[in-house]
Length: 293
Image (cartoon, rainbow, N blue to C red):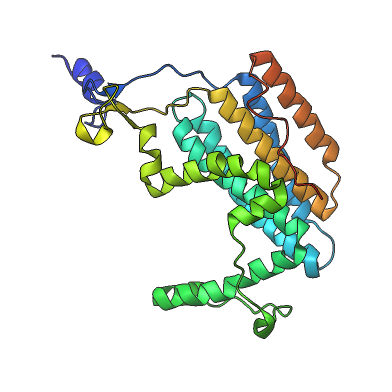
Protein backbone atom coordinates (compact mmCIF):
# COMPACT_ATOMS: atom_id res chain seq x y z
CA UNK A 1 0.00 0.00 0.00
CA UNK A 2 1.43 3.36 -1.00
CA UNK A 3 2.21 6.06 1.54
CA UNK A 4 -0.62 8.25 0.22
CA UNK A 5 -3.24 5.49 0.64
CA UNK A 6 -2.09 4.74 4.19
CA UNK A 7 -2.39 8.41 5.06
CA UNK A 8 -5.90 8.54 3.62
CA UNK A 9 -6.99 5.61 5.77
CA UNK A 10 -5.47 6.60 9.10
CA UNK A 11 -5.24 10.38 8.88
CA UNK A 12 -2.21 12.63 8.77
CA UNK A 13 -1.37 12.28 12.47
CA UNK A 14 -1.76 8.54 12.78
CA UNK A 15 -5.40 8.37 13.98
CA UNK A 16 -8.42 7.40 11.93
CA UNK A 17 -10.48 10.20 10.49
CA UNK A 18 -13.70 8.24 11.18
CA UNK A 19 -14.43 5.03 13.15
CA UNK A 20 -15.03 1.98 10.94
CA UNK A 21 -17.42 -0.09 13.09
CA UNK A 22 -20.81 -0.60 11.37
CA UNK A 23 -22.60 0.67 14.48
CA UNK A 24 -21.43 4.19 13.63
CA UNK A 25 -24.08 5.99 11.56
CA UNK A 26 -23.20 8.67 9.04
CA UNK A 27 -25.72 11.31 8.03
CA UNK A 28 -26.07 14.05 5.44
CA UNK A 29 -25.93 17.62 6.72
CA UNK A 30 -26.73 20.94 5.16
CA UNK A 31 -23.98 23.55 5.04
CA UNK A 32 -24.51 26.92 6.65
CA UNK A 33 -26.31 29.19 4.20
CA UNK A 34 -24.15 32.03 2.85
CA UNK A 35 -26.89 34.60 3.51
CA UNK A 36 -27.32 33.52 7.12
CA UNK A 37 -23.55 33.50 7.56
CA UNK A 38 -23.42 37.11 6.36
CA UNK A 39 -26.13 38.16 8.85
CA UNK A 40 -24.30 36.31 11.63
CA UNK A 41 -21.02 38.11 10.87
CA UNK A 42 -22.82 41.46 10.78
CA UNK A 43 -24.36 40.70 14.18
CA UNK A 44 -20.92 39.93 15.61
CA UNK A 45 -19.68 43.21 14.14
CA UNK A 46 -22.56 45.13 15.75
CA UNK A 47 -21.77 43.45 19.08
CA UNK A 48 -18.24 44.87 18.81
CA UNK A 49 -19.71 48.31 18.12
CA UNK A 50 -21.91 48.06 21.24
CA UNK A 51 -18.91 47.00 23.34
CA UNK A 52 -17.15 50.17 22.14
CA UNK A 53 -20.29 52.14 23.07
CA UNK A 54 -20.22 50.73 26.60
CA UNK A 55 -16.54 51.54 27.05
CA UNK A 56 -17.02 55.06 25.67
CA UNK A 57 -19.71 56.09 28.18
CA UNK A 58 -18.58 59.58 29.14
CA UNK A 59 -17.70 60.26 32.74
CA UNK A 60 -17.66 57.81 35.63
CA UNK A 61 -20.73 55.59 35.75
CA UNK A 62 -22.45 55.10 39.10
CA UNK A 63 -25.21 52.94 40.52
CA UNK A 64 -27.43 50.88 38.25
CA UNK A 65 -25.86 52.13 35.01
CA UNK A 66 -22.39 51.07 36.18
CA UNK A 67 -23.49 47.54 37.02
CA UNK A 68 -25.50 47.08 33.82
CA UNK A 69 -22.51 48.37 31.87
CA UNK A 70 -20.13 45.94 33.55
CA UNK A 71 -22.48 43.00 32.94
CA UNK A 72 -22.81 44.11 29.29
CA UNK A 73 -19.03 44.05 28.88
CA UNK A 74 -18.65 40.68 30.60
CA UNK A 75 -21.47 38.92 28.75
CA UNK A 76 -20.71 40.73 25.49
CA UNK A 77 -17.07 39.66 25.36
CA UNK A 78 -17.94 36.02 26.11
CA UNK A 79 -20.84 36.02 23.61
CA UNK A 80 -18.48 37.38 20.96
CA UNK A 81 -15.95 34.62 21.65
CA UNK A 82 -18.66 31.95 21.54
CA UNK A 83 -20.23 33.24 18.32
CA UNK A 84 -16.90 33.51 16.51
CA UNK A 85 -16.28 29.87 17.44
CA UNK A 86 -19.78 28.83 16.36
CA UNK A 87 -19.27 30.46 12.96
CA UNK A 88 -16.48 27.94 12.33
CA UNK A 89 -18.45 24.99 13.73
CA UNK A 90 -21.45 25.70 11.50
CA UNK A 91 -19.41 25.76 8.29
CA UNK A 92 -19.84 22.11 7.27
CA UNK A 93 -22.99 21.37 9.28
CA UNK A 94 -21.58 18.38 11.14
CA UNK A 95 -21.12 20.02 14.53
CA UNK A 96 -24.58 21.15 15.62
CA UNK A 97 -24.20 19.10 18.81
CA UNK A 98 -21.35 21.39 19.87
CA UNK A 99 -23.35 24.42 18.70
CA UNK A 100 -26.26 23.30 20.89
CA UNK A 101 -24.04 23.40 23.98
CA UNK A 102 -22.55 26.78 23.10
CA UNK A 103 -25.95 28.28 22.22
CA UNK A 104 -27.08 27.40 25.75
CA UNK A 105 -24.55 29.88 27.12
CA UNK A 106 -25.62 32.66 24.74
CA UNK A 107 -29.26 32.05 25.70
CA UNK A 108 -28.44 32.07 29.42
CA UNK A 109 -26.38 35.28 29.20
CA UNK A 110 -29.15 36.98 27.21
CA UNK A 111 -31.78 35.91 29.74
CA UNK A 112 -29.72 36.94 32.75
CA UNK A 113 -28.97 40.35 31.25
CA UNK A 114 -32.68 40.86 30.52
CA UNK A 115 -33.35 39.96 34.16
CA UNK A 116 -30.73 42.40 35.47
CA UNK A 117 -32.15 45.11 33.23
CA UNK A 118 -35.63 44.46 34.67
CA UNK A 119 -34.31 44.27 38.26
CA UNK A 120 -31.27 46.59 38.46
CA UNK A 121 -30.89 46.05 42.21
CA UNK A 122 -30.30 42.35 41.56
CA UNK A 123 -27.72 43.27 38.96
CA UNK A 124 -25.71 44.88 41.75
CA UNK A 125 -26.26 42.01 44.17
CA UNK A 126 -25.15 39.45 41.61
CA UNK A 127 -21.97 41.29 40.66
CA UNK A 128 -21.13 42.04 44.28
CA UNK A 129 -20.98 38.29 44.83
CA UNK A 130 -17.58 38.25 43.13
CA UNK A 131 -15.83 39.04 46.43
CA UNK A 132 -17.51 36.22 48.36
CA UNK A 133 -16.94 33.73 45.53
CA UNK A 134 -13.35 34.87 45.09
CA UNK A 135 -12.69 34.32 48.79
CA UNK A 136 -13.99 30.77 48.57
CA UNK A 137 -11.93 30.08 45.44
CA UNK A 138 -8.72 31.37 47.01
CA UNK A 139 -9.32 29.20 50.07
CA UNK A 140 -9.45 26.21 47.70
CA UNK A 141 -6.55 27.34 45.49
CA UNK A 142 -4.20 29.44 47.69
CA UNK A 143 -1.72 29.87 44.83
CA UNK A 144 -4.28 32.02 43.03
CA UNK A 145 -4.24 34.68 45.75
CA UNK A 146 -1.33 36.63 44.25
CA UNK A 147 -3.02 37.09 40.87
CA UNK A 148 -6.69 37.27 41.92
CA UNK A 149 -6.69 38.72 45.40
CA UNK A 150 -5.45 42.21 44.72
CA UNK A 151 -8.56 43.78 43.21
CA UNK A 152 -9.54 47.07 44.90
CA UNK A 153 -12.69 47.13 46.98
CA UNK A 154 -15.79 48.71 45.44
CA UNK A 155 -16.70 51.82 47.50
CA UNK A 156 -20.39 51.21 46.70
CA UNK A 157 -20.27 47.67 48.10
CA UNK A 158 -21.65 47.27 51.60
CA UNK A 159 -20.67 43.76 52.64
CA UNK A 160 -22.71 43.89 55.84
CA UNK A 161 -25.90 44.71 53.93
CA UNK A 162 -25.23 42.24 51.18
CA UNK A 163 -26.91 38.86 50.86
CA UNK A 164 -25.69 36.16 48.44
CA UNK A 165 -27.42 36.17 45.08
CA UNK A 166 -29.51 32.99 44.87
CA UNK A 167 -32.12 33.47 42.12
CA UNK A 168 -32.54 30.15 40.24
CA UNK A 169 -32.30 30.29 36.46
CA UNK A 170 -35.71 28.69 35.95
CA UNK A 171 -37.29 31.44 38.06
CA UNK A 172 -35.36 34.04 36.09
CA UNK A 173 -36.74 32.59 32.86
CA UNK A 174 -40.32 32.67 34.15
CA UNK A 175 -39.88 36.29 35.14
CA UNK A 176 -38.64 37.26 31.67
CA UNK A 177 -40.57 34.96 29.30
CA UNK A 178 -43.63 33.99 31.34
CA UNK A 179 -44.33 30.67 33.05
CA UNK A 180 -46.08 28.98 30.12
CA UNK A 181 -43.42 29.77 27.51
CA UNK A 182 -40.57 29.06 29.91
CA UNK A 183 -41.46 25.43 30.49
CA UNK A 184 -40.64 24.26 26.96
CA UNK A 185 -37.83 26.78 26.53
CA UNK A 186 -36.14 25.58 29.72
CA UNK A 187 -36.29 21.98 28.53
CA UNK A 188 -35.02 22.58 24.99
CA UNK A 189 -32.67 25.54 25.35
CA UNK A 190 -31.24 24.80 28.79
CA UNK A 191 -31.83 21.29 30.17
CA UNK A 192 -30.95 19.29 27.03
CA UNK A 193 -27.67 21.13 26.28
CA UNK A 194 -26.85 21.08 30.01
CA UNK A 195 -27.29 17.31 29.95
CA UNK A 196 -24.66 17.13 27.20
CA UNK A 197 -22.31 19.39 29.13
CA UNK A 198 -22.66 17.38 32.34
CA UNK A 199 -22.85 13.92 30.76
CA UNK A 200 -26.37 13.18 32.04
CA UNK A 201 -28.17 9.98 31.04
CA UNK A 202 -31.07 12.10 29.74
CA UNK A 203 -29.18 12.95 26.58
CA UNK A 204 -27.52 9.59 25.84
CA UNK A 205 -30.15 9.08 23.12
CA UNK A 206 -28.39 11.82 21.16
CA UNK A 207 -25.50 9.41 20.53
CA UNK A 208 -26.74 5.93 21.47
CA UNK A 209 -29.93 4.48 19.97
CA UNK A 210 -31.25 0.89 20.06
CA UNK A 211 -30.40 -1.22 17.03
CA UNK A 212 -33.56 -3.27 17.62
CA UNK A 213 -37.14 -2.03 17.95
CA UNK A 214 -37.72 -3.42 21.44
CA UNK A 215 -34.23 -3.86 22.89
CA UNK A 216 -32.97 -1.45 25.55
CA UNK A 217 -29.72 0.35 24.75
CA UNK A 218 -27.90 -1.25 27.70
CA UNK A 219 -28.60 -4.80 26.46
CA UNK A 220 -26.85 -4.55 23.10
CA UNK A 221 -24.33 -2.75 20.95
CA UNK A 222 -26.37 0.32 20.01
CA UNK A 223 -26.37 2.39 16.87
CA UNK A 224 -23.92 5.21 17.45
CA UNK A 225 -24.53 8.66 16.00
CA UNK A 226 -21.02 9.98 15.62
CA UNK A 227 -22.22 13.29 14.20
CA UNK A 228 -25.04 15.32 15.66
CA UNK A 229 -28.56 14.01 15.09
CA UNK A 230 -29.61 17.56 14.24
CA UNK A 231 -28.90 18.05 10.52
CA UNK A 232 -30.78 21.35 10.30
CA UNK A 233 -27.75 23.62 10.32
CA UNK A 234 -29.58 26.69 9.07
CA UNK A 235 -32.31 26.37 11.69
CA UNK A 236 -29.63 26.27 14.37
CA UNK A 237 -27.85 29.26 12.89
CA UNK A 238 -31.04 31.32 12.55
CA UNK A 239 -32.17 30.54 16.09
CA UNK A 240 -28.77 31.53 17.48
CA UNK A 241 -28.90 34.85 15.61
CA UNK A 242 -32.36 35.51 17.12
CA UNK A 243 -30.95 35.05 20.63
CA UNK A 244 -27.92 37.17 19.81
CA UNK A 245 -30.06 40.04 18.49
CA UNK A 246 -32.14 39.89 21.69
CA UNK A 247 -28.94 40.37 23.67
CA UNK A 248 -27.90 43.34 21.51
CA UNK A 249 -31.37 44.88 21.94
CA UNK A 250 -31.25 44.57 25.73
CA UNK A 251 -27.80 46.14 25.97
CA UNK A 252 -28.76 48.97 23.61
CA UNK A 253 -31.98 49.78 25.47
CA UNK A 254 -30.61 49.31 29.00
CA UNK A 255 -27.74 51.75 28.43
CA UNK A 256 -29.55 54.21 26.16
CA UNK A 257 -27.53 53.73 22.97
CA UNK A 258 -28.73 54.49 19.44
CA UNK A 259 -28.24 51.16 17.66
CA UNK A 260 -31.91 50.17 17.40
CA UNK A 261 -32.12 50.82 13.65
CA UNK A 262 -29.05 48.65 13.03
CA UNK A 263 -30.56 45.83 15.11
CA UNK A 264 -33.90 46.14 13.29
CA UNK A 265 -32.06 46.03 9.96
CA UNK A 266 -30.38 42.77 10.97
CA UNK A 267 -33.75 41.31 12.00
CA UNK A 268 -35.12 42.14 8.55
CA UNK A 269 -32.08 40.59 6.87
CA UNK A 270 -32.50 37.46 9.01
CA UNK A 271 -36.19 37.17 8.12
CA UNK A 272 -35.38 37.52 4.41
CA UNK A 273 -32.72 34.80 4.63
CA UNK A 274 -35.06 32.43 6.48
CA UNK A 275 -37.79 32.89 3.87
CA UNK A 276 -35.35 32.40 1.03
CA UNK A 277 -34.05 29.07 2.34
CA UNK A 278 -37.56 27.94 3.22
CA UNK A 279 -37.14 27.41 6.95
CA UNK A 280 -40.52 26.51 8.48
CA UNK A 281 -41.73 29.54 10.42
CA UNK A 282 -43.21 27.41 13.19
CA UNK A 283 -39.71 26.50 14.41
CA UNK A 284 -39.04 29.92 15.96
CA UNK A 285 -40.56 33.38 15.91
CA UNK A 286 -38.37 36.36 15.09
CA UNK A 287 -37.91 37.22 18.77
CA UNK A 288 -38.15 35.53 22.15
CA UNK A 289 -41.45 35.68 24.07
CA UNK A 290 -41.96 38.16 26.87
CA UNK A 291 -43.83 37.82 30.13
CA UNK A 292 -46.94 39.91 30.57
CA UNK A 293 -46.29 42.97 32.70
